[in-house]
Length: 294
Ligand code: ADP
Ligand code: MG
Image (cartoon, rainbow, N blue to C red):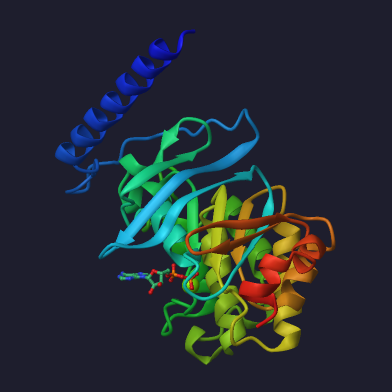
């Protein structure tokens, strides 16, 4: 191809993208208000990639919290994200879950679902779950009831809040209770659980929805060492079945999760500073300078 043909092509593409962006902005995100069922979208994962983040940029009053951030997360992968405060880790999760609209860039779930066209509830419905730093469980209800509600709020169709749990759902509930180490506490009021146990309950509630991708923002903050280690075991047991993106400052925890071989991404100033095994990042001067050395 000649240079001017390439230039023309690039100009056409830019014009097309600008037109599509204007169209999206005019239409607004699709919604399923008044109890209308949300459109069902099926992500396609044949490339083995759960999430594509491409050139994502978010500005707050001219300050770029994300600056052309690009990364991908594989299907079933357990990925740790590290980086100094203000690096944009939480903002990235806000974009993926539809809480924040980026100024530019693309976000795709599987190879086909354009997340930037979806509203928050739809993003949850197609299989992206998120755990915030502060646990949000129903304090007045028991552990069992909390999980029961989440199971019934199943993102798949035919879920019914008023129906009794099916045998299959009861099995799943038992499985979840074991997974989050709360079997002996099933009938306890959630408000009486320790901070760590509440975090596990919330993770159990997210898992009840069977998300394909789970985003966890500093999940072990405030946990005891023992709780932290158990949480690590839990996450490791989820690998393969779910993709997990874990933002964490606790390096012992990151070590436990990566076991010397899984990939870690270090964000800095809204983009990827380095990516690789934790040992490689620990040996990377830039990472030490902005983060690990502090
Ligand atoms: P991290 O989670 O890596 O610590 P954040 O994504 O929370 O970083 O923040 C990235 C940068 O964006 C920070 O400088 C933060 O102050 C800024 N920021 C985040 N959210 C907002 C907002 N709603 N308004 C203005 N600035 C924000
Ligand atoms: Mg944060």
